[in-house]
Image (cartoon, rainbow, N blue to C red):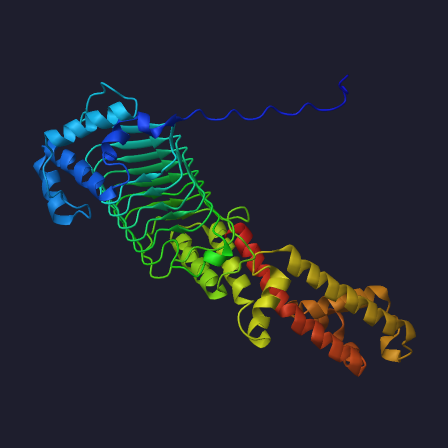
Length: 438
C-alpha cells in the first residue's frame, strides 16, 4: 500500500519522436552519393544551378560566394541516382523536390550528422526539432533565410566562413559543444534567442550588416576555452545590437578590436555577469569599460554604473598591493561610489568612537577650562570634528576650549577630520548616483 504522505514522482518528460533523416527527400538529394561528400556537394550545387533562374543570384555565386560552382551540369544520371537512392532508402516513387519550395528538416534524427560544406542554398532552409550528431556548413552560402529552432547539436556546429545573405534565425537550440562562426558574413539580420552555447561560441572576425539579437541567450563557455580567439574579436556591428538578458556565466566576452554600434543594448545585473572569472583580468576590465562607454552615450546611468563597479572590481585585483589598494578602499568604503549606507555607517562608527574617547577624557578631566564638560559635549565635539566645513567647533566651543584640549585629543580630532573628508565625498557620490543629480 502506497504511503499517502509521499509525493508522487513527476512523470518523465515524453521523448521526442524522430524520423530517420533518410526518409526525407531533401536529405536524399543532399547525400546522393552516401559518404562521398565531394560528389554530394557537386551534385547538389549542379541541381541548384540547373534550377536557378535569377541572374543576380547566379552572378553573386560566381563572384563572391565561398561555395564552389559545380564543374558539371545536372543531368539524367543524377535523376536516375536520386530515384535509385529513394528506392533504397524506402522512399520509392518520391518526386524530385521543387527548387522553389522551402527546404524543411523537421523532427529528424541524423545519426551520421549533416555535412553541407560548400553547399549553395537559394531558398529558405529550416531545421526544426532535430538531433544532429555532427553538423558542418563550412564555406556554405545561404541566400535565403536559415531557420534553426529547438535542435540539439551534439558536436560543435561549424559555420566557418559561411555567408548568410538572408536572415539567420536561431531559437531554443542546444549547442552542446558550442558553435564556430569565425569569419562568417552576416548580410541579413542575425537572431539567436534563448540559445544555449554550452561551450565556445566563436563569432570572431564577423561583419554584421543588419540588426543582431542575442536576447536571453546563454554563453556557458568553460574557463579552459577562454584563451582562444573566442566570441566577438575583430567584429563589426554596423546596426543596433541586442544583448538584453544574455547570460555570460564564467567569463566576459572579448571585445578586443570590436566596432560596437552605439545603440548596443546590455543587461546589467549579477544574474547576467560573473563576478569571479578565470580569464585574464585585463580582458574582463577592458570589456566592462567598453560596455560602460556605450551605456553612458545612451543615458543609462544605473546600468553604466554597474559596469563601472565591475571595472573597478577587476582593477582592484590587478598588480601589486600598493597599486590595488586605492581601488580596494574605494570598494570597501563606498561600493565604488554607489552605496549611501556604507559611507554613512563608516562616518557613524568614527563619530561613535570619537564620542567614547573624548567622553572618557572628560570624566577624568580636572582642568578648570574644561569643567562642566559631559557626554553631550563629547558627542557634539566628535560631530564637529567630522564636519569642519560647517564651523561648529569655532561657533560653539571657542578657541580657549579647543586650545585646552590635551595633545592626544587634538591629534585624534585631526584624524577624525581627515578620515571624514573622503567618506563625505563618497556619500555625495552615492547621493548623486541615487538621485541622478547631474
